[in-house]
Length: 165
Image (cartoon, rainbow, N blue to C red; front, side, top):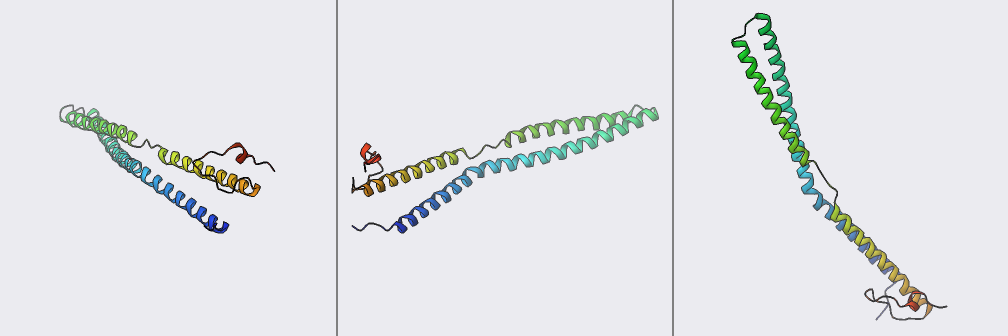
């Protein structure tokens, strides 16, 4: 069987590394998509909570205006009824805004792509091991101590690791 050319070997290695990198990027995309969707829901809830808080503040301003009107006009009957109604509505809106903000806070807790990082580390270790194995095979062939390449699943013997010259 003919030995492959060194250029072909490097082309194969380059293609394999490119495939590994593409696969790692795809894995990161797949892992992050659900997390980013959750974050989008959280952002939407924060926006709704902000609008409710703004409406609640508007209600408080109206409430304050009606309260001052009641004080100035010495009328406590119907005006205070309106004031308490607006005040109750404002409190309800603030409570709803607080609940939505708390829910949004839990949705915005995003972690990194842990599984992708673990897989990338394994890939780097595999490539590093393959390079070391290839260097050992080349050293053994150059030294003339072993004409058969060492298989990756078989550990190097001491004379293969450190060939005598």
